[in-house]
Image (tube, rainbow, N blue to C red; front, side, top):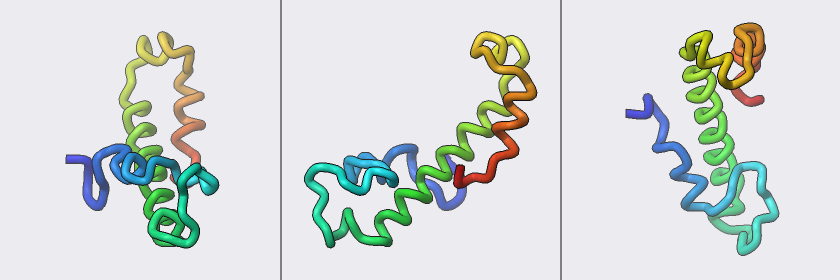
Length: 86
């Protein structure tokens, strides 16, 4: 449904109550499951997969849709040329 190896958007972040870049979230136990390197890696992977999904959706927008958003096709191409981790 969401692609091979992916989860529903936001599932891991919702379970953790934080994002991959939020290392000092209130209530985070260190060390522990939410603070472990494996958990942070999973959250970072989820963020990367979400960026890929959003960029694919952006690539599929029509010119009128892009104009409504204030984007040009050049803006889209610049966004699509970024690596998945950025």
